[in-house]
Length: 307
Image 1 (cartoon, rainbow, N blue to C red):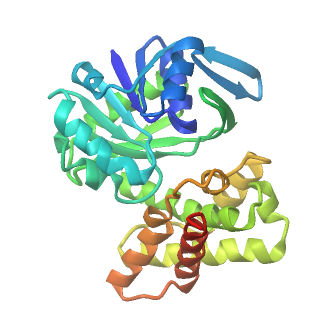
Image 2: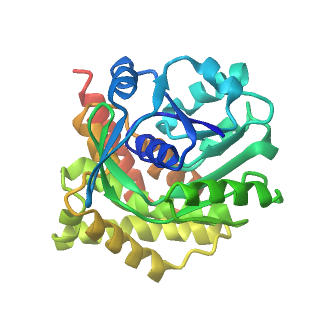
């Protein structure tokens, strides 16, 4: 099977390497010339707790590679999802299965404009990584992955096939019809932790060491949980808070993705993380002032780069 991983950042590299190790024919599609050249010359190197693993695969910036893909896994930043949707509309083969495991809320809706929704699978993953140089990634955290059909009443069999492929590639994966709840559960985690790291510069585990910062994380999570309950998603607050602490502890000195973006002066995904919570809360008529404040702070940081 030919798999295209769209976006060769930390998560894209981790999943591309896993698929390649499982014997799949893998191509990374990315617009960054230095990354494409590095992968073609040296493959993808993952630094794990057990040492370095190098996976040989190819990379390209030519979206026409999508025409022959059996599977396309999307890992670009959320603000590039529209560009991916356009490329899919121009090049994607009719039978290609598209999977989005991106951070945030709403990416699948954007892709649905260009993809046959019967072939669209969405989900979320708890793996984490940090790019140290093009094609070289520190795989800082492992965790479960969940996938399910984009259509609320969609057939689960395609998601099960995707799950089987990812399991064979070494990723613990569950296919579920209730995938939207799983995505929101990850959104709670991201909304509570990513902007805190981005605005404080603290690494993952460090955020739990200061009581006031830990309190801010709980406040952000609490608002996101209130919105989930309002829109009818069954998210257990006790489980989520425990999971947030476990993920931060497990990631140790890893840098959350939004902190990596801020340090590199790259646009963050604040709009599809805390911004999605703010928008949904507004539609439901409830207040989420802490999430509003974090959006403002991160937008302010982004604006400061233009000086």
